[in-house]
Amino acid sequence: MTPCEKAMTLAGYATHPAEGTPLLEQYATGLAAPLAWIDVAGYCSGRFAEGTLRDAQTKQWLAFLADKFGQSAPEVTPARLDGVTSNVDRSVLDAMAVAEDRAGFAIEVLAARGQTAGATLALSDMHKTAGQQLVALANGNFDDSGAQSSSSGQSDPRQKVYAIDQLLANPTTIADKASGQTVPTAAAIEMDCARAQIKAVTESKSSTESDTLLILAALAAKHAYTAFQLGYPATDAELFE
Image 1 (spheres, rainbow, N blue to C red):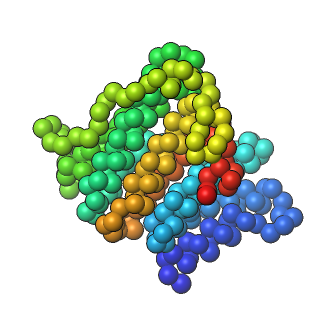
Image 2: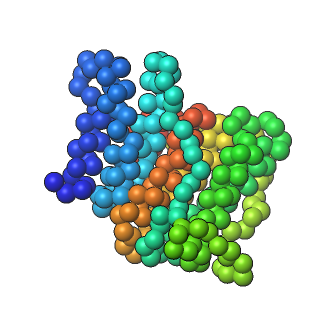
């Protein structure tokens, strides 16, 4: 089988157990699902969005099962983008950096007010760090060892400050256009970031190597999973058209 076929087969097997399968067995089998869906995003043409969102969706299901069995839920870790070595279209990296920067700013504002569940300075810093990494990548400022160097004086699409009227008016819950529901505000910020990054990749007219797509998919999936943890609906009706 091709890498795409292998990924789709494993993802399907791990995500859709046979009817009547005990929950503990579903949990054990499902542990392979998130990575399989990231492989779908990277290896299957036209399935980047599906693979990315399914990764987050299956992690949310695993988190539910982990709680039932006294296990640790999947964690959200800081982004590692130094493995992006192919020539990604500059517009993709710029758009993803702006999405990170906007989310980081919004979370920081809400964290300062102290009224929004899930809005922490730690989460804001994760966004801003990822945004800086993306800008450095766009400017070619990673050396051969993967270390980040300064991007001083080079192009930077981040605005650093964004409109916050809607956030201040809706610090706890907000109307989410994508799902058509009212969702926790921090969750909406995270999902907006994920969707913006997915859109940047899927609408690019330039081809990107699979290894790089895997890394970019994992980054966007982190935000979608965080959104689910903060209360964003994780059902197909809210995620897929």
